[in-house]
Length: 144
Image: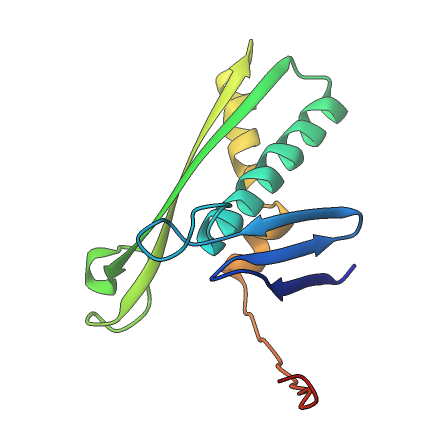
């Protein structure tokens, strides 16, 4: 399914995903704060995928997982301040922190396995895998 994004007023962007329409915007210091920022949407996608993936796995296993909460944040740091980063030390890298809370009567082994499964959600794999973005451009020069 293609996602369509169109400029609206000021920095607002209308996003169409199938039958769903919503707005992205920048905070008040830049935009009108009428919707989540692009980074909010990115983190939301990772969080939603994490919750869904863990819930599906837990249900298939018949485990007593009642709910999952994921808290996410992003910051830019130097690679030298990141143990798992492979970039040169003076390179700035994006660090996403994800905190997962499992709610249910789970064993330590189940929690460990669900944590491993969280890293297998499709959005996590996309963000940690090789990404190539191919851009094509068209221009409608009749609109002025």
